[in-house]
Amino acid sequence: MIKMILLLLSLILQNQTHAQFPSSGIRSGFVLQQQRDNLKKSLHLVTIYQTFTLPLNKETEYRYQSAFWAISQFIVYNDTVANGFRKVIKAYHDSLDYETKRSFLEAIYAVRPAGYMSQMMAIGAKEKDPKLFAMAQLWIFAMQPVLKDKIIQSAEYRLQQDPGNELLEELCFYLKEYSGKKEYPPVQDLFALQRKQKQKTVYSFQQWNRDYPGIAIIQYEDGRFARDASGKLITIQQLARSASSLPYFITNGNTPQGIYRITGIDTSSNNFIGPTPNLQMIMPHEMYWKDFFNATSDTLDPLNAYQELLPSSWKDYSPVYESFRAGKIGRTEIIAHGTTIDPGFFLGKPYFPISPTLGCLCAREIWDPLTGNLKESEQLRLANAFMQTPAANGYLFVINYFNKSRPLTPADIEPIVHAFERGLLTGPVRHAYSHAVTGMD
Image 1 (cartoon, one colour):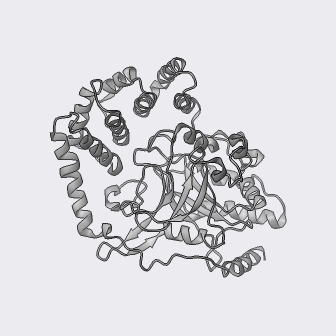
Image 2: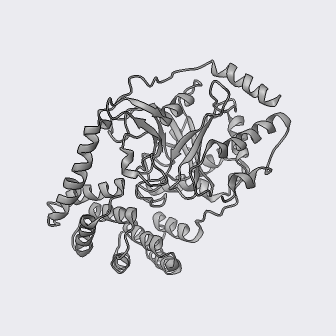
Image 3: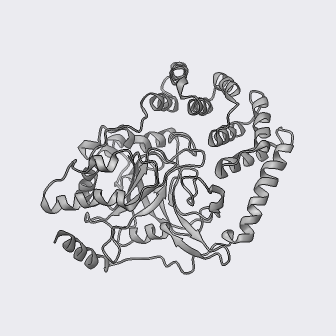
């Protein structure tokens, strides 16, 4: 009976649709097979191979930076790349530009080759810039977790030399506290508060291991969840892994957990993102606070206002503040978008066929390489489901809520929503399903 009531309510309300984006007409010449073949050839022969045959100097550093971006984005490692890494390591402490060093550290973290430990430890010991120091230490930690205590000591010493440095503070916090084994607050408390506050909200449920895609769902202003015409919960497969897989507080790292403000729907001219409508978002500290909180002035206390978006059970849960802290450090420009990148680059990866990004949320899209037309799009489903109600803005929560060694499926998410909906009709439902949802496979 409850299921029938929910289905009837969903069908009635979803007939009251608003602006929708048709798939017809969404096309990208960038996905044509010839274009993809040309990109792959240019990537390997020109961007990477030819660049690393050049001497490393002020005239060629920009080429090296482009090569390192390609290595990170497309997860490329071979003898040519190893040669490029050796050149940069040899010249690292001479007079390299900051961006050359940063892009190199991002690339070597992305592919994590063995055999560079002594060189990276030397870089980490001598590097003065806080972000570059952190990136070197994070590589060492990723390759040799047993060195954690030594790395923490080094990070704490640097923080003593530079007290109040927010990036170094976050590095120390990450090394000491970060773990996938968290005591999860009840997610239905989030649902209940957003329903009370009448905020349209996207929840992107992710894994602690970001190699595996997560699932996004939408809760409308009246508290109901987006469902299709048959009454089935709309779930969107979404990847929150960056190409580098650096931690959330580093430029181009994984999508931070926490709250984002959705400011509207737009399209991108970036060939790799593609023309499918995306959700425009801002992070805490990225713009005026009145924009983030939809307030009339910019005079409020940001942390207190951020906490007001959380139920009491979540206010002391440190991972939900990652976006707040990362934004304060300087991360920006994280949106929810699709992808035109050839999935063949990521064949065999746990996130195939979705593309990793520079830290955005990326939904699965399949394109016709013969016509350039969009064939399948989780991103379009997200945009259209979001626009089923009038508001073009709202909030998005990124939450690591699972420790499963596989991509999430609708079956992982549906019990959470159903338990909340049953609670609305029959009384509060708290932890009855928590083990089934968050337990290890």
